[in-house]
Image (tube, rainbow, N blue to C red; front, side, top):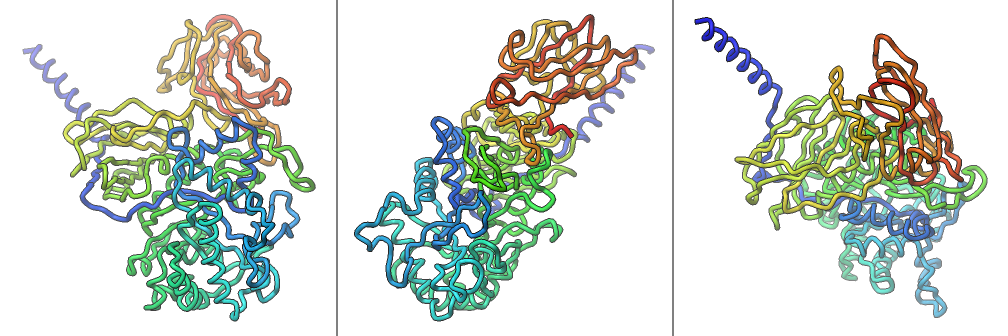
Length: 637
């Protein structure tokens, strides 16, 4: 009888534990038969000569950067490039990072640059032309050309900065844009697929700009641009709006005009001001008219400037991933564009990849030095852009199956391939089962790619799909993209950075004496003894800068559980003879508790933490020194 009671007690305990585990698991339904908007792509701008910063780089860095931005196999595969329609303006701002927009195709009324027998086709708008051609080589087919200002001779103030388009020049401007599209096809072999006549028409700035009212834009498109494109057989689609705040106000007049609405193909707006708007607004009139919505410009700004280290880490990446998810599911955007994907533009939060430079922002023009920083937001952006391709459609998915988890899903109507993007913005992991209903094709496994504090779009092991269901543990503070097995891509080239967390157990090699164990709920490295080390391959220190306002200042911290104490040496390329660039001392403790120790890193350009190096954390001391949880870089604050 006693044995039976023990068995029943164990059975009850098992059932309670099993039920508890099951209760922690949630199910997210993805229904591929319920479809929403078609995806046109993800992209960014090379306006204001930013492609020149890449063009000036030496090989092989130049091709590496281009591949990181535009290649699906070796990068995040952006599929849309936005350029500025040249207005001939110069750098009147006095900022060495600002190069002016681009040359105008019509410097004087009726005189086009290509009509001059001495026209230099190779130098005209050379950076944008080069950038578009390089993007095209890597698969980009969508090119959006946006006007910051018409040429000065068309303006009320005879300047590309501020002012308005003269009413008597409306037709001239329409012809100008038609000639721009046709000229770029004829002379450069580039098909401009979309034209936007006004960038941020609500603002008058210190650089190229032009004020419009919504009613003026409506009149211009209705009576001039639309009819001119039709008459001259210009196939480029018209994108309208590009308000600096994300709203449809600047397009409503055109959408409600029965003539203009037929000419408007894309309703566009910029994602600035979202914080003040307290969330992403809907575009109800655009939707009611069946119009495609694009978000065509966004970057870090205001309180999210790049000069704060944490706005380059996973916190920033999660913030932007959540914004993209809301853009996709509230106004149902079909395209999402960053401002400059790559640029040499100072610490202003404008880029996903920042090119390092020699020079002073206040007085001299920066010169690229071949080094670059890749921010965490680059990889989170890639969780969408690399996998959710033009022509895919968004499908139904439970957006918030549990608090802190945000899900979007897509399919390719042609091939049946599919993508599920899951964001976990909470610090702890969440177990989620994904129920795939009406799957386009039979699938036995999905392939995950994860961006987290310690991972950069890392390809993880396949997850089996059984009975249309796969279950995963979504790591805390992560973005994970799951693709059907037939759509898998190769892992990105291994490249670590100072904006990542270096988990002790996720190393690229460690001494045989070290052990991975769970201590007080943490997965850590233990059995730390004298001379043991951890290795991390191919760490990009760039120019040793962690934040924009403290050039060449880099710190490193370790989270450890002291025992007999010791030292952590930070070395480059070799655990014994490599350059010592930092030292962290851990005091002994009779009652071990987790603590953080730190050091400044030597970032001198001759033999310090400058450029790419293998990173070694070497342990020195006696006895069982300490347990190691993780390492993180910082800006010394």
